[in-house]
Image (tube, rainbow, N blue to C red; front, side, top):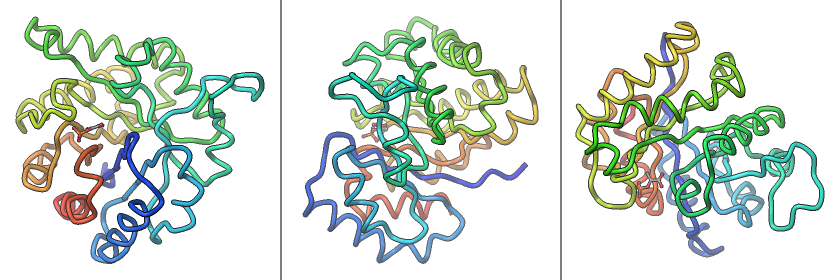
Length: 251
Ligand code: PEP
């Protein structure tokens, strides 16, 4: 089963009209040479509309978060999934470790967001990963299993036919510490095995991204892993030359 590589930029709470325009024009200048990799940018919600208007052809748009609410209404400060699809989003991140650790998102809430995303026409990118303490305590597999199981229990294994999973070891996010290619591949193979235990066909088609200080100089060796289908990129997605060099590494 061939899976198309996906390289996704999570801009987090960064950007301005001027900075976004510069970043998008840098991506546009290089996008023609990246024809085998799907590219995705996930700007802050307030910029989705203006980013879509300047989005280079062939680049997808995604959001960083959505409300778990299936119906719009009195939820101050929240963003409904249908608003994201109306603005042209194809993807949405769910369960990013910053959402889990800073905003108290539980496995249950993440599963609800995953479900709502799909119900409203978005492809969820489910982020899972262990902290340093958990890795050192030998709990990596248990954490990954638990985070994935919550979504499988809520949405069913078939839902992964229209979803992406990002393995993001928390200790590697924004720290400059990257998982070794072997550590990353081992975790990805474990995740694919968990999916395969439920449905081998779905497992073979689900794209698994690596995230955590992925940069131009380590992307190729990470993406060489048999179960690694691209990357979720934070810091290095803020500079077009870095982001596109990572995309080149996935070609
Ligand atoms: C992320 O935020 O998903 C991420 C992987 O960040 P960074 O690349 O900066 O580690």
